[in-house]
Length: 385
Image (tube, rainbow, N blue to C red; front, side, top):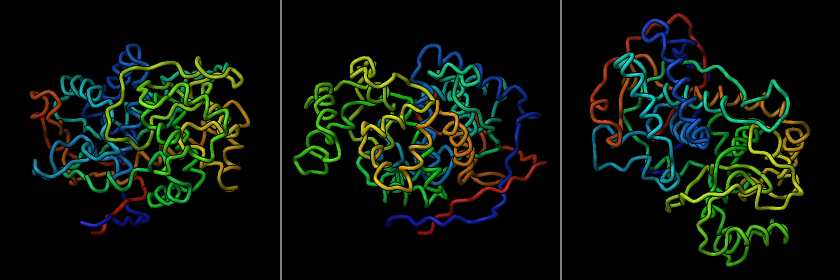
């Protein structure tokens, strides 16, 4: 099977609703919100982990929970998305497991994995702290989540291998991959701003410091002082994990992983680097401000400054405390959350599609009966072999 080609079909009617579970499971969204608050109180990395997991799910054939599958169409010998190199360090599966456990206890077989992940991601963003003093920006930006998604029965290993943007990609490739999903350059720059939060391991940037693209040399776009600073923290073989981005820069949960497992070690990156850049680790302007200073952690981050069409967007998002960015990020998250969703009789209803999930819940499946009162038109991703 060769590389997939995507076509965005305009006007495809997808049956999603706001508050879809109001009759089937009226407390569903409240349960997700409450459990996310508990999980966040125990581990502040949960929002970033789920945001990255959600991105990987939606970016490959749509928001259908295919990233959770342990087989494809029942074929256990078929490679699955989580085995693809870009997805091998994804985290958060266990957190969705815990959320689904409570949903199943309240409403057996009602809420799909795809909806649970979409709701949990949004609620995690809302919970994440923001360094701005503005009261109305105490957490991340809000956006509505339409529900009624069904879960995929097929996993897309080859697509996950080829289509997830990589940390060393250039701007043209990044924009191309996002455009295949219907994202404009502005939406792309906004969505990559999700690197505001999370934790990154040195393994994801070490090649940039010592052997960029196999040249045996560092990334030539890095300034000498930044290169020295990063090498102090990420020496050859150092497995330290970095929180956020330089002085406190972005917090990329990098879009593309390597085959290595993430180190469990971590540190507050902004406390170890130069204090010349204001600290921050939330949904504000610090990620873009660091790009203006040439201090993006990933080559792909700094590539947003490579051309005027994206650099001017970086300047715009860096110009305030994140107000413009937060507005655009909310809009693009709403758009991404509806990419290629399955609904009606497509896919399967509530499921626990991974053997890593609790066995008793894994077998708790049922058909979701569709109840539609609001038809929302969203773009649908189709694949042609």
